[in-house]
Length: 270
Image 1 (cartoon, one colour):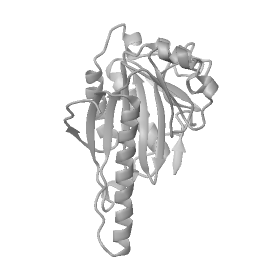
Image 2 (image 1 turned 180 degrees about the vertical axis):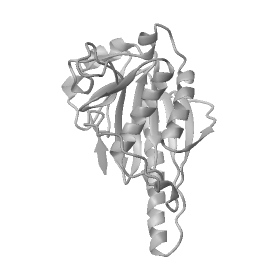
Image 3 (image 1 turned 135 degrees about the vertical axis):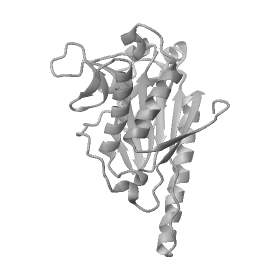
């Protein structure tokens, strides 16, 4: 099992693998589920279920190969959610980076969870677009750094649709504004934190759309003390519908991953 931090040092975006799509048994369809406002624990449990199902499928495929039988394609999913106020701490995070007591958490209507991704502490809440890709990278490419860079690139191109110039900061994962060397006010608009087991991913990205940024003031996000956070709403000076941002993001993800996205209708939150 490999765990990768949203604070991990990025590497340059790799060139596409022209032969990868032709590999036997690959499935480049991604099922998109828009889950709406969903408690963090419910979404985490659903991710774990999909991950376990995919890993079991891969085990069956390995057993089939040993019996000279053809494998069957594994599935890929993308969960799009919005969470009630919650702070999550990765495996390598420092508990002291949460600056609230249990009583203060309750007063702010927030919860706290230690989780199994890498990295430090982050915040999720209403008005934030959270994406959880549960992808079998054997269907695409087996390169976790390229995977992270493509998630970033999808967000960067989505922000460009709104006239916002965003990019990366050397040594830091995520998407930033005023990211160029020497820029006076670098600020983070999207965080990444993922886990990968046998090339199956979970956790993902959190894009601040209409997020209440004051909640970031109660943590040391990713252990970084000298940079700010921002949101699409703050940069544009207006509220932006989350559904609109989702609609703009999905085609970019499809293009970058050379994937076919299909949408499953979901009637209610988990």
